[in-house]
Every structure is written in C-alpha cells, then in structure tokens.
Length: 347
Image (cartoon, rainbow, N blue to C red):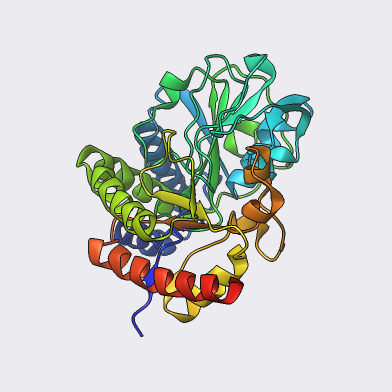
C-alpha cells in the first residue's frame, strides 16, 4: 500500500534543504558560546539561521529568540501578562489566557483591547485566517508562517510565535519574534544565551535546519506553490460536497489557509474516520495533534457554535506542496465509499 500524508498541519516532512543543513551542522563541534574557532563556527551557524528566519518572516529589525518549540515561545511571550484570548487558540496559548473573547460562527474573534490580547493568525483545525487588528500583544503565526505571505513587520504586534516543523524544518525548534525594546522576563535562566531571553546551549543542528527550511518556504511562496495547493484543496472540497449532502464544511465562507479542509458528518465520529482512513493508507486528523488521545468534541468548533455531535464528527485534511490532484481525488473516492457505508448503518 502506498500511503498518502494529508496531515501537514500536525507536522510536515523534513525538507531536503533542512536535512542538508542539519547534516552539515553535525560536523561543527563547538559550543556557540565558546570564543575559540570551533565555538565561533557554531555561533556563525546559529546567526545565519537567525537571519534566514528573520528574512523569511519579514522581521528585519526585530529579535528572533530560538526556543525548543512554539509552545515554549508562547510561555515566554505570555507568562504573567494576563492576556485575553479565545477558545479557538492553540492549547499552548490558551494555557496563559485569563479572559475569554467571543468567537462568531465563521471562526472570527472579536478583539476588545489589542494590547492585552493574544490572537492566532490562522487556526490549525479549520484553517480560518483572522483579520488582525494592529497593536496585538502576541500573534500565533505558527500555522500561517510558510503558507501565507505574511511579514512580522506588517502585523503590528509586539511578539509572534513560529515553529520549524510546520514548514519543513525539524521538530523541537521554535522561535519567539519580538520588537526590539519589548519587555520580556526570561522563563529559563542560566547562562544568558539568546540575548538573555532563553538560557541553555542552542540546538545548533535544529536551528540550522529551521533557517534552511524558512528560506525554502519563502521561496515556495514566491513561486506560487501554495496557490496550486489551494486549487487542489478546492478540488477535494468540491468532490466531497457533490456527493456527501449531510457533510458540513467548516469555515467555507471564510478566508482559510490554502491547504486546510475541515468537514464534519454529524454522527460519524472523527476518530472513527481517522482510523478508517489510516487503514486505507491516508494520514489525516480529527483536530490538533497536540490534543491527540483526547476523545472529545473539538473545542474550536463548539466555540464557533457547532453542537457537540457535529464538533465530535469533524476531521481535518491538510495538504502539502507534494500533494497531487490524484492523491485528493482518490482520497475523496475512498472517503465517500466509507461515508456511504456509515449512512447505511445509521439508517
């Protein structure tokens, strides 16, 4: 069986550019904090990657602080700030929210006070893209970076969260991008690495992979790769919509990530669909991978006003640059066969 990977919002395959950069970094023995030649060589790798990430994210004149993940970056950015946020935010951000914001049926968040608010740019489950007001305290750009033409300097926020493994880099590396002069208290203290914001010897190999992946992702955007992905996503949506009359497409009338399709067939549990499609050779998900193993209705969908049954029936299909039209047409064919059997059992 040839498997087809359709869960890019959970994590992406490692780009060849990132792999090559990481292999090269393995031969650099020095500690980036050491002053000898070997240390300076390692430091040069880190700073090159910092420049690559900053350029790809349109963050010239900002500080890029490398972390172990976007989750750690969220803690660094949000701890102790008493921020407002919505139920559609990722759990890593929700952990620091002290006041709830309302969400409408299209997944849009009503922001009352931007300087006290954290808001995602794009939702990992539905793909819905927010219209960001200026002056936000923190923007979670994890899903958008690499898929949308976005620049930190356009966002008008104080800080932004990004992650390597969402755009073809390695797992275990993220970054907090922040305007210079932003007040920030280190959460991991020690040797004062990363400009005193995050102590601990830098993950030189992972950071090198992040930089290379960010550079390659920016190139994909400029070459229109994600426009083609959006066309293939729309083909998949139309193929399913034409035959599955009871299926609801979440965020269909909103601006969405070009690769993301979230849909629900009320009464057909999402985790059941994930398992059936996995056995058929397709990797999809029933929501955020960071909530895997938790059999429950999607918090994102219930916040948008969907009932518990519908919210528990949603699946997410997220495409990548290598996804073909043949992949999605075959997926639709297999899924529709199983949907027909579900309707027959439920009758």
